[in-house]
Image 1 (spheres, rainbow, N blue to C red):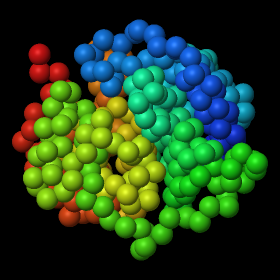
Image 2 (cartoon, one colour):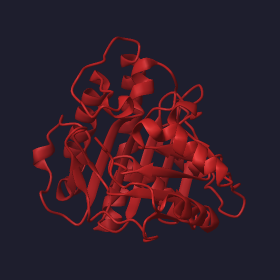
Image 3 (cartoon, helix red, strand yellow):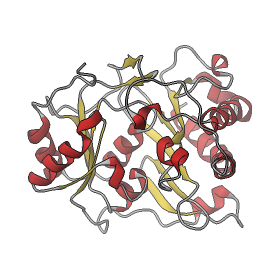
Length: 305
């Protein structure tokens, strides 16, 4: 079943993600901000009509395109779409983030937003697809499956699947290793924690200074990893798969153990599922060691008030 789900996602979802990206580009031209989340973090609380509309498109496409998808559980950041039609219990979880990077999408402060989907079990992430509507002149892609990772520009003159199939897979041996580390989730302390990472010999980058989405940057080696406080289960797992595909890992800094997805908690302030603790992710074991030793005694509590 595992391979069948991966094959079905790889066949059907690139087209749908491209449609979703086109919809995001058009909606971004309008005032589509809405209220709904009250965690106190501007990055987390940003919500737009695009998040709700695009999730509805993705969920209902999954509902219709192949009955195998209905045998999976579905975890989605928002509540739109026929979520109730999917399995309540399953080994496989399809997770969606309709607009990753909603704040910069809404505020028009950057083009690093993305439409995201991944497939995982309790222990592993086994397929990821990311479409970046504003990357370059025509958008861009990241696709990860066991043994193969792709990242590159879209070409709307060709079918989406054909574009991905024409890309040269990323070669672990020639991919550069960067000291840049994406820092997020530390609430008002993101910049201070980024500075701590820089003092430790790496290059900590807080969200406001990110040059784009972390996923293509990590895949291609422009970034070396990330350090995330209580990451959510809708977008972070793509970094988990990228790092592991590159021979690295994603670990909890307080114990050095590989992340799994059995210990999630509901963040009621943000209305999303999260993993506990602080997670370091990198293709480079030495980078993981530096990040873990640095952050192992930092507070694991997301909200200190």
